Image 1 (cartoon, each protein chain N blue to C red):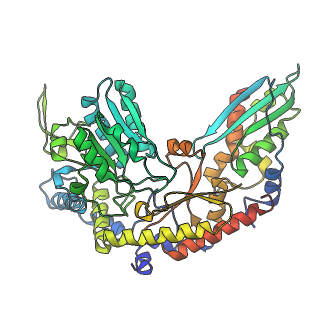
Image 2: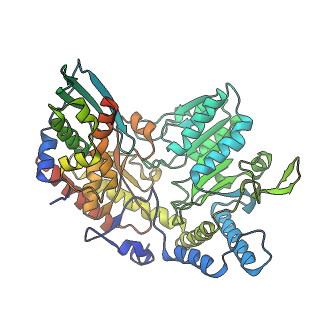
Image 3: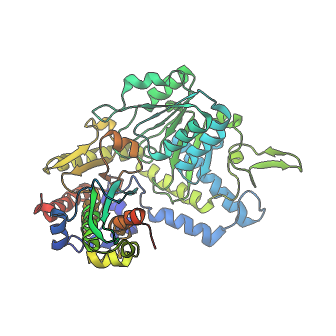
Length: 124
Length: 406
């Protein structure tokens, strides 16, 4: 049994959450991981209160980056842009649950979505 | 070749990863060092550490003797003379040295520089940037479907000022016919630079036969330490070139208003060099010479053939590289359908198998092949069929882990 590729990771990889594009997104940006060539685009729609009403990511990449993108976008649904701006590395790692402390290069895969989020909404 | 005996010289290979014996298959990135290399460097620090070329005391005389001894060994190893071997940090710095010291003086607007699509970024970006600085043209020789260079495009060399070409592709292992390319360059008046980072460690190199103007290679890819690389340059080319870096040791006389440069190769070695690195490299050259480069080439060819055959037995594996093994170095690149190379490399790591995943610093080639990334296993003297079997076993494990969703 793999420490990283646990069942719930494989399950989300198989059934990604919030994959796709939003044509009329208010916020969008993309980020690139030079290590593996992975690319993620992020699309966010908000209502007049700044609440996230729809969020989608589009891209191909390894299981870690895809699952992380799924979980982070799911987490941000219904949150405000200000809350999205406050999202940190620790929050992402808490969401994906797997321990990547001994795999710093894979940590970059998990955090690619955070990088694109920062580019999309800005950082606090 | 007795790989069991060789393995014993590499203490690192007895280390366990995740409770399993390590199978190191990332030799195209860097090789391991045998105890003979590590001991030669320790001996320098423990017994005669001093700066070179200056001191008249015992330590310094010994350090100079060993440092220059390493240069002699390297020169003999590739069929050059000592004054034609310049020590650098790595192959990248060697190529940049030529791009600046030769390129800045000789490339002007409208000139043509030729490279190939399979170049490592280190033999791609320096020329791309030189061309941009000088408004010169950069032309690129493509590959064919068989992963070999398209010879019909060798005509691009005509009228070029410089052709810079890798002897062996670090990503797909193709061995290019550099003898032919340098011959065409000579006939058409182009300067030739060969990137030997992936060839010098693995096969007999003879710069006289190759007849290149420059050859860049790296110590850490041939059992030597990191931080030591080499640039071979034909003596008359090096004589004509201005220094790349200025400072101590590269000068003969310094006056308030002018300086005179030192003889070759010191003109290109400003400042205190990597003395321990050169000494370690000298020991690495001795180690390789004892085995014999043709033996090494034979061993790697056999192992690569075996790896390609075993990989072809796994469903959903797509391999990249020529199947003419006389033109293929010890590199097996592949992708597995539905599993990202980074996931494969992580799962292989769980099995103690170290391979490379990504674009291997060859993004233009990956783009040309329509790939974002690939997996690469690369072999050396301590690898054997057992290592290939472990690789295959680990790939089966990766497939099983992802199996439910494929």
